[in-house]
Image 1 (tube, rainbow, N blue to C red):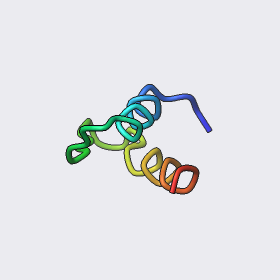
Image 2: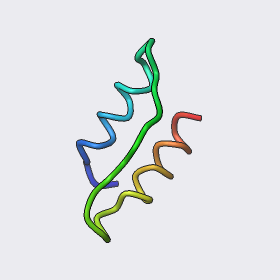
Image 3: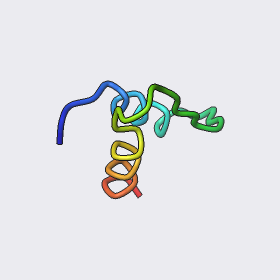
Image 4: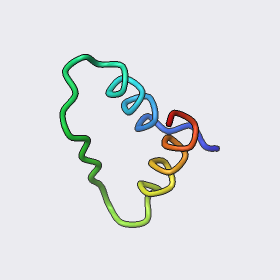
Length: 44
């Protein structure tokens, strides 16, 4: 897996006490769906 800053951001989001909805935005074809799926498999 390529290292992505978004993954670290999601880990911080998961460990925060005051969770709000996670919104991932960005340009097309940059790996948003890929990183969310990897995060879900490893952490949930």
